[in-house]
Image 1: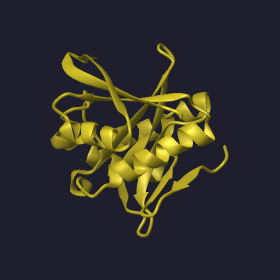
Image 2: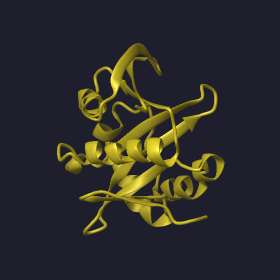
Image 3: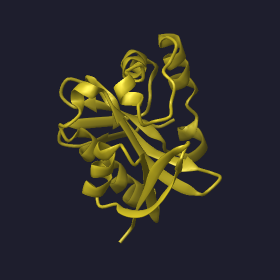
Image 4: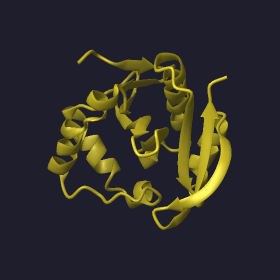
Length: 168
């Protein structure tokens, strides 16, 4: 599989690797990080490692969620990327960062780079973003990157919002 990298002023986005397991495990075991995701924490680092090694989205669809690193230090910040949903045909943008990196613009910077790649590199026509209504920070990111509100929906038993942006 060819090497994949997206760089921004401050960030490096690349495919998940086994070496991401500790950062991924710690992020996904923070109750504040998981509060709006519907995901359960990993039981141990081995489970996080198995998830990363077994992630098949790149092979199936040619893209997926990507590890986000500090471009200078290569510190693990979180993940951001695109996910294809075969049931609906939608491609959604998702992101998750360690709590200590919230409020620094990393999600907006990474999400903007992912949209650009989706439209220019993958020739996608539209990309959606979803969040629970209570997740005001994620909704702000979706709005900052130009997504428009479409509708409310049931987000795993919670009230959710759907946003969308289409190629100009």
